[in-house]
Length: 376
Ligand code: SF4
Image (tube, rainbow, N blue to C red; front, side, top):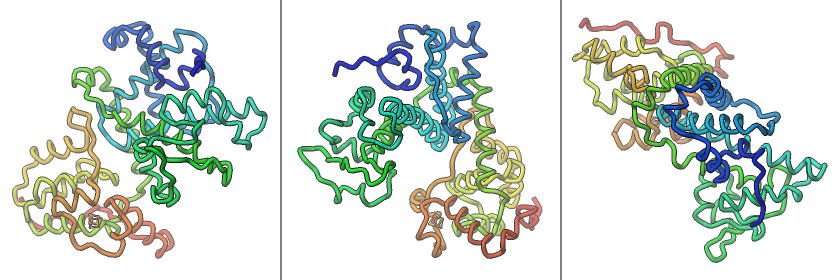
């Protein structure tokens, strides 16, 4: 393929080998960077990138950058954002960042098509030389209208429509044939696959193993990212509603209230769940004061560690249902459990139903749990 990507596009497609080569040739080390004269600017760009991703910032335009210094800084901020989310190790934050990066690339591809054809709706003209170049780089054969089976499986895993199921696909010599018939503008399958494939590629090697000394250099950015993520989670879940807790979490709380010791997996599941729906460290620790072996300093240490406040910056997510089954914590399943694969999804669903039933006036937990029954 003869097409040569313009340097102006490196920052829009930072994952391409050409972009990576550019930054490698112009970059010494992270240690130099964080003590260099442009440190504040680069840190700012990095944080803005992560913030935009977490806030699901709508992409309305993308500016091409021509100044080589600015190109370099943008590309570094792309790399640093990946480094920071690797330090945090939160799969949801990683997913949001990679989705944001893939949407930027995708937005430009679509609009580049529009510029060239003058038509926003005609996706036959989508396949410009640039689109073909990108598709080729990520393993999609636009000319042959096909994608390798293994690549297809990887990138369609998050797509739930039955049309993506392999049984509904034509397979030829290790390739999946893609329909090029547009059912509607958005339904052009190759376009959807390009976007999915970019996100898959960006996500597949994250989190990277980053030495803790390197993570320490970005402690401030890590902390700000964790705080923002927590605020967003709180907004998503709203006020705490005990009546919407899934049966597995109810069972763990009941065990604590009865004074039974929880297993390590049980403590982890309960702490992460409560943290993910917005309870703070003190509220969670207070709950543990019902446990017969309650030790305030040990409890605070464990809770702070799990919630990312304990120095490592790693914030853990509540385990999904399959994990809960493995650790024998999935108990008292009910009807809603049939439709969810994560206790947090159960909580969201049940909360929605409760609020619908009560016209938005469902009972909230305040204080979050009944007072401690036993004295320790
Ligand atoms: S299916 Fe999921 S939400 Fe329901 S009890 Fe089991 S782990 Fe909890």
